Image (tube, rainbow, N blue to C red; front, side, top):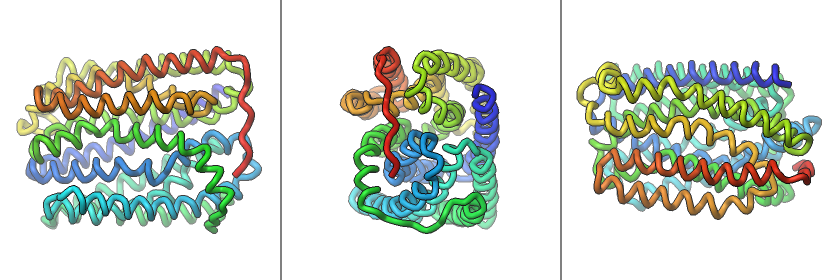
Length: 418
């Protein structure tokens, strides 16, 4: 079991590192090629729409990772039912984001980019569903190669947009085109692996997913918004210039936490099984994995703290040097982010998840309030500080629930299939 976890963790981490390296180089290219204001528009629209990807998923990835490893013989039924539901959720999220874009009164260029990019939800839901099923079956190579192809193609098309001197909106068209091509390739692969591309929408599935996924959805949606709260508030309070400055360094955080996300994804099926079979072994594995991911955060922490000026100047140029103080604050939060990601695999699969929700919502609201108040006093440093304070509080909260869950003797019963 440990060998399988190590192998899948290695594949996922290497895949994430490679895909994020491509994405990060592309992000740097855009930061250097666009004006700071246009880059701020790009970063703001990207962050705003990304916040709603978990809404479109509605916790279904966590539902799959929890239940499919316990019922692998019913993969086809799961897939048909969840594919139909994912298409509906993608359509509803599209309507929600367009409505919000019209309500909040964006500038013309920002609104056009938002309206174009909002169409991402339906193809993304298909892309994500197929990869989630393969990951739950511990066949992670499909997702690794798909993400690499998508990242590389999107970057190449984006470079073409810049070369042709097209507007910011065309960068989102390039993103969507690369996603559609990637989804086409994944659907062909899905048929070969026995996943039926025949959506089915059943009342029983909707009811069961709602009963269980509403808890997952709340946590995942808040987690995704949480990471980008300062970017959104800074963009609204301080304008596109400071949104571009903060967005340049917040990208390091977004890229960095994909490492613990990948490891968390690799251990998820094993965590799910051990939670109902052997809590002592789960506790040992949880802390061993946690120590490992914290160790992985120390190198970027040292780089950002000790050589932030040199690094930002090298990567983005002197226009982005005002971001350095915010980068150092975000660096301090990295080890906390890395460790905190693992806790979700245990809390969300336990009977304590319902009790955890009010605490998690309170934590989210406090960080959101800090992200509104602190930038007014300390600028983008205040935005970074809101996340650092939030991660310290989240560590304390997570560990309280982890200790309660792993200290109880009663086992969870496997969920019925959808």
